[in-house]
Image 1 (cartoon, helix red, strand yellow):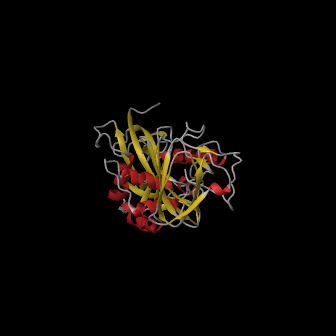
Image 2 (cartoon, rainbow, N blue to C red):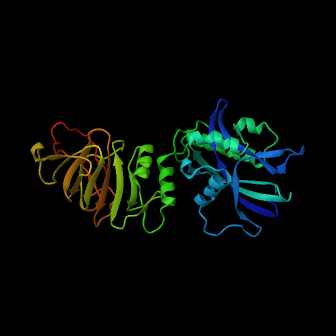
Length: 351
């Protein structure tokens, strides 16, 4: 039966690789003690909704709650942690530490990546311990919510491993050396929600170095939380690591390429011309730009490592692939048009 009181809790999962497997940071919770008078060990947390008068300002984002826990309560520098993923909630009834009243808790676990060099100093600072699920469940000094939490995590790992769930990081398998590209982009966006957004050189490099695809900041159909509506244009950054498309007629849009680092080869020809002699070639270096007009077949390829920016603008649906002159791009799959000398369909271009 649901308790007469209810609370919502954000639970912070901070992980470290140990000899016994992936350990989670638990810290003593002095206000909640065992029958022997010893403190429970709990995961870092913060209340978001309470049936008591709420001690928070409405409209506070999850990032703000995580900042409070990480910086104010745990003392982790702002640059040393990244909010990776919100996990599915867990519901459990247990006594409230402050009053002992039976309370219905809705617990929202959040995976937070912490810089490896900061993990052990953090543990010492809060007098905490790294505990694997097996070790913490074998103890009696943990809150009643812990078994439900790790049951959920175990079932999540099984679904992801069996490809029955959307892609996600396996939390019980290993601890990554760096955060994901998406998490870094979300953190940058959380700091740039105002009217003027600044993407510094350091932030751009950090985000691109963590991923293997383009960083799309303005798109026709935003599908990631850090993206904004394109309003007739798209804005993306790309590198030599991107999985890209092949031989595209750029219509009904124009594209503008800019090289930030490295050297980018670009081949192009009018859509209506045929033959290898119709292709023109240039190599772009740092600071160079190229504008590709509509109905220009074009291919790009990095000579080695490289970073660049691309803008796409036009009247049509920029994000779609399909009919020439209607969709944002038209790949030439099966097109008999001869490629430039020395190039094959393995040549890649940025969208």
